[in-house]
Image (cartoon, rainbow, N blue to C red; front, top):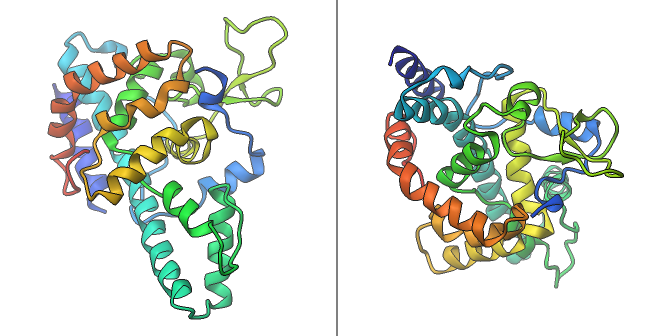
Length: 278
């Protein structure tokens, strides 16, 4: 219980200041490193060690410890995305009113488009802003945390412990990660090794927000935004059909995990000054 309390205190302190397409990250190591260094509105410590969650014998305590460990990192990354979205909205309004963008604003927008894999285009009939608004958006904390629990076996998998990879993301250059024991003959993918848990969370969110396999999730999110509806985890899981070769069975499993674990996530996140999980 003391360990759970410790993680809860850390979370409060921090807050105060399928198949192959699933996990694809085709950026070079230099691009990944540069992205990892991009600051956000919530300054987070860089986490390079994973607690031994297997020590817990009480299931509720284990879940609380896991969510308390990961939730502040997810909130920090979502806060960074919200900040990007706000600035995007400001520049979109200026552009739609025919006002010129400064060189600094243009460069920022160009880098944002590059990061979110959108074509940079300020022509009059450009679709860039529409595409970016679809991509530059948060993923509900509950969905991120439940997927992390599912993919990392509650933080006890080899990939979570040895590669700081909580979402099973792949890479394709030799030595970029860990070779899966069950990798088929002739396959060349590895499970990417990250230099921090923070980087793992950021890469996962970027994957969800840019990979073609998750367009359906982004469309569902866009529809709810247009209707001014609450952005809930359970409303977006259908867009993750490609995250696992188990397909619908995987979606049903995620939905069940959301129903069971959302009350615990609410308790963990409501202990912080940030907004409750979605």
